Image 1 (cartoon, chains in turn blue, red):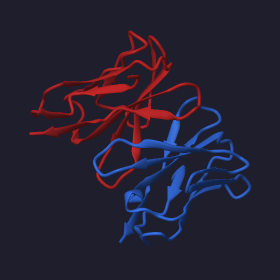
Image 2: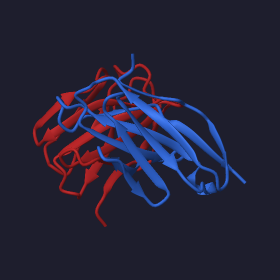
Image 3: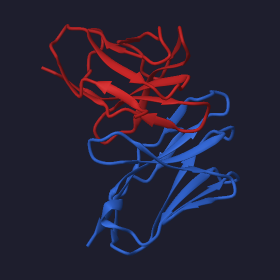
Image 4: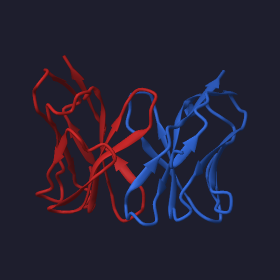
Length: 111
Length: 111
């Protein structure tokens, strides 16, 4: 079983709609959680950290469910520029600074 | 500007050659990482370093070597022992567990 699993998609979303997707992690000792965005043939870029209480950054909302061991990302009012692959990243509690990446969820926003 | 610089952007390697990928950061981050990404796949950790003169193998270290003589620099050598080196190589750095920041990557192709 992979440490971090994501639905690869693609999630095809009409412009202006809301899309949400999850990421599950296997290690209950995981300490920190992040969402990254990766455009085609580019490097991943940090989108947002995920806090226990949930957090919002503009149109993006991230949630953490420790009991069920998953994090989620919700994008409201989708823009064409939101089309990208979204990577879930988890740091293991027993490995300081070592990040585990999911394979990514592809989102395609259509006009 | 603070950031991570990888060079070259594109690199072509002949069979049996060793090649070195450069990674420099001026973010004053302690930890640095090398990842490999293959098409349609997630990032896989090659090596990481938490402090100068110390580094640890990641999940796919065979055929690769690194050094960390300076805090700012973490070069990766792809040796002839790496049988399938064609991939997108990403260098990253982080401070504690506050998220990792990536360079623009190097695309290595065997010719």
